[in-house]
Length: 376
Ligand code: SF4
Image (cartoon, rainbow, N blue to C red):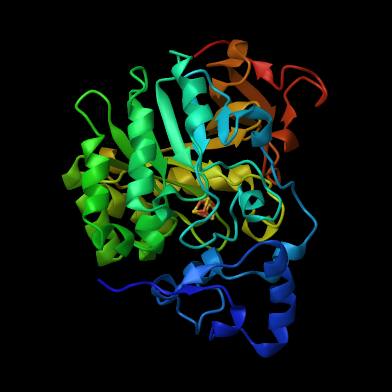
């Protein structure tokens, strides 16, 4: 299996004109650049708008003053070192601060910056917190990408979490199947170890992250297959991103191919207003139409995904857009009283985040954040 070579120097990229490099290098000083030769090999350098290029190569628009580094205020839910707890059933363990490459649109890019202290390799305090709370049935290992860790280290973490009897599902958030499938194909011990912790009534899920069908190479599909055969359940989630997957044909192809590979799409996220992410902004109404159009003509297994926003107040599904309204439903809510509530907002075709929508019949400053129609 080929070893990947990491690339952190923009000068090593063939498709960046010399005059553009200083500005992009300044951007990369703030929002780290990291890729690998295998993934960079998927780029068509003759196309400045190539979607794979947009995923990993800095964009001049990232320097626009827009958004916040922690747009959903995740850090506020830190309950122990490297541990976040927002919704009763689910805890997050942020186990490292490195990924196979860095997505330019990352909503957690703050973790890759100097001085960040939200991650922790020591899951001891987090596991003690989880063990004391029987309502936590789901633990998400994230970061950063947990598959960057050695198989031995990741195995120790999984064993520790698996030893907590009430944790039924362990999810691992990873883009490694796209960025470097050889991490899985070249280390058979990795899928074996993950499968060992995936038991009949307490599974391991790999939450894959493919944004574009061109990332689903033969090796990527083989890596998914290796995980499935080892007993891991694989699903996919990705944000809707301008210039990458914001057209119905691309998204439909992604959904179809993922269903064929056994990694069906779970969520499509409305992109958070994260600092540096202006080049990837897609308004909600446009995103909803793209999403709906993408669902046409594909099998039921390929179109089970939901279009959601991970808002500070909860996980909000965009369920409908009418001539006048945007209608959303809270799947999960920080405030239990909001759980399942359906809310109506005035349609605004430029709004790209819940806070930019005006609740119907209310002033934006009113609480709760929309006109409630009742529980689901
Ligand atoms: S793989 Fe996930 S955490 Fe890593 S850079 Fe991409 S979006 Fe961010």
